[in-house]
Amino acid sequence: MTFQVDIQPSGHKYTLEVDKTILDGALAEGLMLKHSCREGTCGSCKGRLLSGEVDHGDSPLEVLSAEEREQGMALFCCARAKSDLVIEAPEVTELRGISIQQTAARVMSIDKVSHDVAVLRLALPPGSTFAYYP
Image 1 (cartoon, helix red, strand yellow):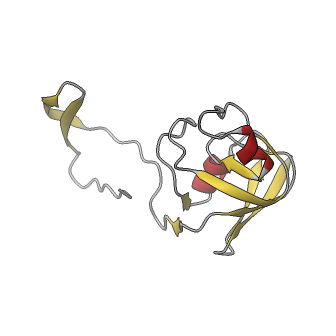
Image 2 (cartoon, one colour):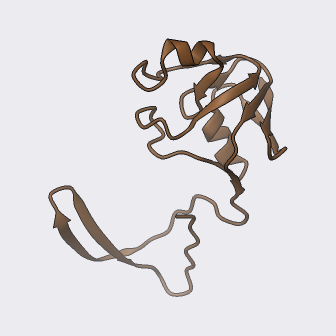
């Protein structure tokens, strides 16, 4: 089963499989919605449902309160569609030509710059390209 998602104000539309979150469906279609943690802990992907119904999944009440849910808000990284949706997501960009990639690489160095941050330097095979969206 699939649902149609209409993103406003951009007018982008995509088909969402019932087992995918709103965010995962958008990313699979090459549409970048604002997000960060992808687990419901940061609130970056919080957006408004203009119409339709969702299952809020594992979205914590500390990040998306019951009052916000009643007002039509959702965490797009946790919410799954229960009907066709119209959502408000003002920051939408297309990932034209950039997709999830898997490639072999050689670890050149690992520099521990603090107790919880490391800089990993990789060497790609000759002729490999690496496109990314920061």
